[in-house]
Image (cartoon, rainbow, N blue to C red; front, side, top):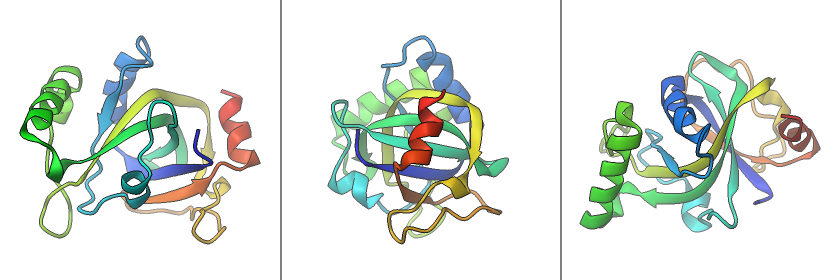
Length: 172
């Protein structure tokens, strides 16, 4: 497991329910998140997690932005703009079959050219029995806590897998 985690702010819980339905029975089944961002998540692009070297993912949900409710392992990343036709076809088919509410691969960036770039491959999604405030996570960029009091969904931060976060996760 990488020593750094990714925090995503305001994931749609309906997407997570759909993934949980499958991964609660098949936790190793890789499914997908499609953040709206029109630019790559740089560290995922530059040091792509794998099934042998995953990155922890923490997520707040759209109706409770200041609290981490879910965790998963990121085990892959794709730039949706650079997919081969064959890979795009297979990924779209997987999404439409296993995550039908996603409607397949989509382009829904809020800014720029309207193209969503990131496709996160995740496994082992869990709803935390004891959610915790985002302020308990420390950003790797400046060693400050992730700000609470969030009012809009979107965005992400790289966070340290420090003692508090490890303790919170390992007591699930």
